[in-house]
Image (cartoon, rainbow, N blue to C red; front, top):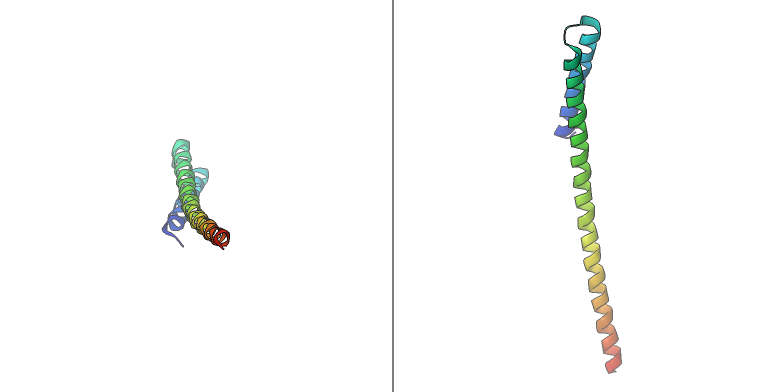
Length: 87
């Protein structure tokens, strides 16, 4: 597991504990409970965005390699075509 996943699970457990504490123990205020839930949600969202961004960078690198291979292929066909005209 990545460290983002570990932190998300820890924050989820804290949010669950604070929510249960509010429901049964009435110790934290409602605003504190909501704050913990929002922080957990925002960190999870941030971790997902970073994960998807890394995947997109990887995909764009693969497309650049594919584009370069097509450019080389076109150059090879041009050289082959020029060679046939000279014969």
